[in-house]
Structure formats: structure tokens, C-alpha cells
Amino acid sequence: MDTTFTALGLGDRIAYAVQQKGYENPTPIQAQAIPVVLAGKDVIGSAQTGTGKTAAFSLPILQRLGAHGPIRCLVLEPTRELALQVEESFKEYSKYTDLRTTVIYGGVGYGKQRDDLARGMDILVATPGRLLDFMEQGEIRLDHIETLVLDEVDRMLDMGFLPDVKRIVAKVPKTRQTLFFTATLPPEIEQLAAWALRDPFKISVSRERSTAETITHAFYPVVQAQKFDLLAHLLEQTQYHSVIIFSRTKSGADYVASRLKQAGHTCAVMHSDRSQQERVDALKGFKSGKHEVLVATDIAARGLDIADVSHVINFDVPENPEDYVHRIGRTGRAQKTGDAFTLVTEETWRDARSIERFIGMSIEWKKVEGFNYTYSGIFDGGGMPQVAPEKPKSRLMRGGRR
Image (cartoon, rainbow, N blue to C red; front, top):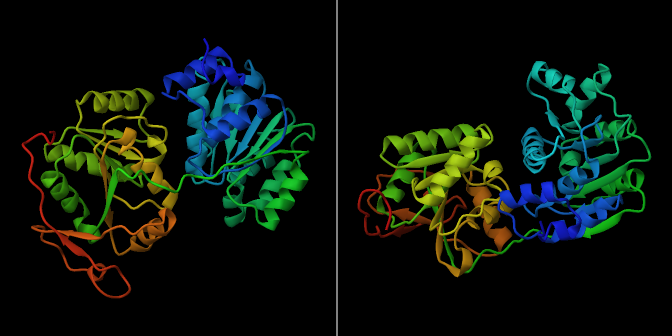
């Protein structure tokens, strides 16, 4: 098969898995990194989450590994969530090969992870602390590592992991290939890069900060206890075609979806605790119109390419402002108009302000007429934004679609 990904040097099996995920063209960092990684060179990439970075290193690593053998690739991630996300990507891209990926992270028991390790793997995705635990117990050796990936290194610095990272790197063969990704390069990280890499190829890709001009934004302040009631009210009075609702957590997504179903909405859920088949069915049902609402977390939603989404609603303000750009990019596509609503509480209004600074524009804060608000300081004074009332929009017929 001939695709833009095979043109970069990837084989048919991996390129087909990429195609099945709906990716037609490589992102800038993928176009730059894949040929370099395939050539076996070290890379230092200045790139943030959301630029396609994971595929930029996972695809050529899978191509270089070829067939199943001993553990030959180690990927270090700062958090459990990122480790799980990267593990999932490796598994999806390698599904037409016999390569195996395992993930280990702290905060949970050792039993299942120990069983996974015993079955053998080609790629190990790990957080530093848990990896050191297994190494000290003699259950993991890094003698055969050919490719080492240090991902989100600036976050590892912020979390105090750099000493652990150095201990791990010292146990990996010096003849390895090292791929190093960070959004920023403070002096401590520059020193680590100079020690860990050999004549690296440098790539710098910035995250898109702008949003489509066809998207209308609005912040809706509300007390935490009334968030779902306000969400239901907005859905009831808004003329929409299809809606994606974002939650910060998997439990939050399940809660919102359950309450929406009770209210009579057809609803699907996507997050990392759902099986692959459940996520495929959810996405297929949403695209076909069987479900009018899709509730998702950021991890499950990355890479979604869905046409004709009229509204994105952030049930939770994203923790990172760049995630706001990623979320609302699901609407207003191909020059079509779209709306982005965000529910803001006293606990998250500073995160909302960070979004305004990040995208370089002011977003209107609105109150919905006809909703029985519980009073909160978020509505006036105290340095918080002044909120304009919003006139109710025409209601829809039952079913919520045009």
C-alpha cells in the first residue's frame, strides 16, 4: 500500500494500523521525526502533548523492532495517565504485528504488572519510581534496550523525577538510540540531554494556540453542585446537531453519561477504561447519528476526527490551556460554524483565565436566563469576571437534533 506514512519509510502493517485510526497525513513533528528515528539517530524534540508526538516516536520504533523478542524499547513517562496513553498508542499501531507492549506505574498493586512482565514484552512504558522498584527487585533488566524514550522531561523535572531518570539511564546500554522530548529546555534539562544523547537531531514544533474563527466561545459560571443541572438546561434550550462533552476524569464521564441517559438523551462514552470494541461502537454510533451526545475524556478523545460536530461542552475546565484548543477543535471544522461552552466553578475560574491568556482572546462569561442559580462569588467582585445574562435560545423538539 502507498500512503503518506509509507512514503516516510513505514511498512504496510504499521501504515495500515495508522490508516485505520483515521490519520491520513503526518503532523509536522511526525514528518520530521519518523525518517530520522528510522535511521537510528538520537532526537531531541521540543514539542508539547497534542502535536502528534507519540506517533512520531512509536511508529518508527515499531518498524525498527520488527518481530517479537526481548525487551528492546523503554519509554519513560512522568504520570500514570500519560503512560497508559502511550501504551495504548503502541498497542493500536502494532496490532498487525507480533510486538508486545506492557505498562507499569505506581499507585496500584504489583501483582498484575508482575504477571504482565513475566509474559514478556518488546516495549516497556513506565513511570520512573515503579520501574526502579522492579529493577531493585531484580525483575527487570535493561541490558537489551536499543531505544530509550524520555518523554515530557520538563514535567519529570517539575515532579522531582530527574535523579530517578538518571539512575535508570545509567543502566541502559550506551550504544542505544535515545529520543528526548520536552516542551521547554531549562538548564537542568539541557544538562541531562547533553549527558544522555549523542549528536542529536533537533526538532522544534509548537502547539497550535489559535482557534478556528468559525467557533463561538462562552464561559458559564456555576457552583459545583449545579453543574449537571446547568448542563442539562443548556442542552434543553440549545439548537444543536451533535455534541461532544468533555470530562477531566473517567468517573466524571460515566456520571454525566448516566445522568444524560436518565434524562432521555441518546449518549455514548469514550475513555481509557472502556474496551477497544466499546470505544469503536461508541464512535461509530455517534458518527452515524445513533447517539446525539458523546461524553469523553481527553485521553480517549485524542485523534478523533468527526465531521459536523456543532457543539463542544467542557463539563470540566481542562487543567492545561492547550487542551482547550484540542477539545474545541472537534467543532468548527472545514469552515463550518461551531460553539464551545465551558462550565466554570469557583475552583476552576483561574484555569479559565489561563485559557484566555493562552489563546490570546477574551471569552464572554454568561448566565442563562431561566436557570435558578445558587449564588456564588464567581458571579461578581473579588477579581472574578463580571457575567452577562444570556437570553434563552429557542428550544428544540425532543431528540435534540435539527
